Length: 278
Image 1 (cartoon, one colour):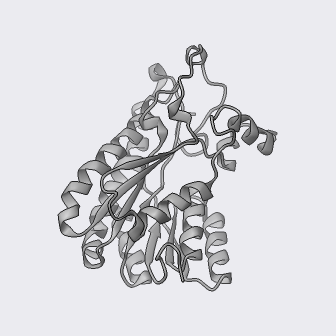
Image 2: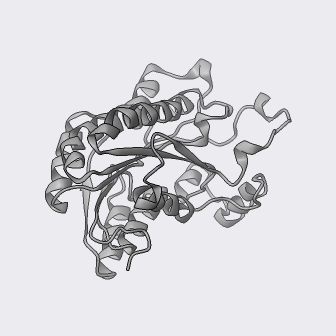
Image 3: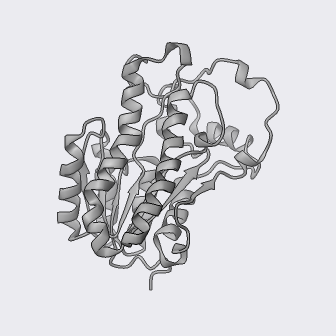
C-alpha cells in the first residue's frame, strides 16, 4: 500500500523533464499515481521520465507547452485532464532563472520571467480549477528561498519567487472553502546539470560538493529531497497545511552569512539559452 496515499491519484507536474520536476514526477509515479509530465524545451528528458514510469508499470505521458505564451496553458490543462481522466494534484514547478545586474536588466527579460514563473502557474491553475473542485484536489506551488533572502543579481527572479509565496497564501484562503487545498515549497540549493550548462568543463560532482560546503547541513539538496515534501503535502498527512510555503533548504536561511560576497559580481551566468540577451 502506498505510504503517501497516492495510489490511483492523477497528477500533473509542470517542468518535469529535468531537475526537481523530474524528481517529483518519478516520486508520485512510484507511489502509484498516474502522471502528466509537462515540458517546455526538454523533450528528451520528458520522454525519459515517461519511459521510466512506464517501465515501472505506471501510467504517464509527456505534454509540451511554452509557458511564455498564454494559449498553451488552456491546451495543456485540457490535454492533461483528458489523459488522466480528471485531476487530483497539480505541482506548479516549471520556472526559469536568470542572474543579471539590476542596471542591465531589460524589459524583455523581466517580462519573460514573470510570464513563465508567475503568470503561467496562475492561469494554468485557473484552467484546472473545475477539475480540482470535483476531486477536492491539492495545488502545490514551487517557489525558492530567493523569496526570503537576497542574492546578487537576482532582482527579477527573486521577485517572481516572492510572488508565488504570496499567491499561495492568497489562493489557499480563496479555494479552501471550495474544497481545494493550496500549499507551497521553497527549495534551497538543489544543483542539477542545467545549472552548469553555462560553465563548460565543470566537474559536476565537485561543484555539488562545493555547494554543500556552504550549507549548514553539509550537503546540497537533491530533487528527491523536494519530491518527498511534495508527496507529504499532497497526501492526507499534510491536510492541515494550508497556504504555507515550506522552506526546504538544509538550514541555508537559518544562518547569518556575514561577508562581502554581495559586493562582487557573479561569475556564473544563469539563463543562457532560454532568456534573451544573455
